[in-house]
Structure formats: structure tokens, C-alpha cells
Length: 117
Image (cartoon, rainbow, N blue to C red; front, side, top):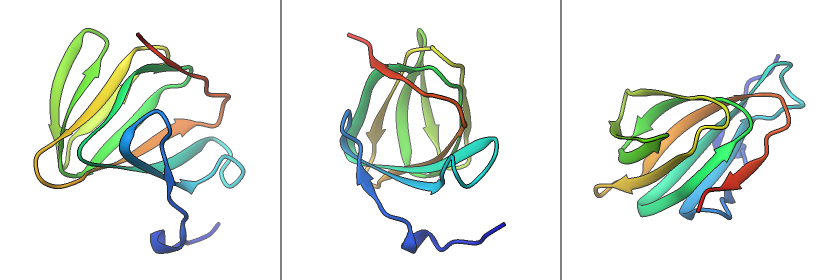
């Protein structure tokens, strides 16, 4: 068991995205089943269409974005919950004047990300 302050967790740029950063709040070696990450996509930033080999459970903390999941496009905002099944193409584009911030929980399994052209 532990408690952390988010301000003490390092922030890294997401190489596949633009104006996108990630903090690993609970790493795979810190919990037996799930990892928790916090993503920040600055206004106009995006993560391109891609797949992951693990599912994603997400909670939107702040801001708005257009996201694509499979063949559907959604506008999501503060308070929304998103589920993305494993191997389903998905993308994000922050809209509006404030950063788009969300928590993303994934199982502690090997995760391979592939860009979809």
C-alpha cells in the first residue's frame, strides 16, 4: 500500500502524439493487476489512430476532445467514462481552450501499440 502526490510523479512526452504528456501514477511493478496513467493533451494536441493489445478504461478529468473508437467518433468532456477494447483502433484530438486530461487504467500485461495508417 502507498500514497503518492501527483506532483512527485515524473511527466514524459508521448512520442506518438503531439502536445501530449503522460504520468505513470501506478506502475506495473506497484500493483498486481492494473496500471494507472494520467494523460494531458494540450489544446490542439492529438494522439494518432492506433491499436493496443490491452483494453483501456478511462475517466475524463478536465477539458474536451474528439475521440475515435473503431468506426465511431465521440465528443467527450469532464466526467465522461470511456472503454476501449483491446486491438480496437482509437485516436484523440483535444478541442477547446484548456488541456484535455484523463486517467487511463490498463491491465498489467504486455501492451504493444501499433499506429494505424
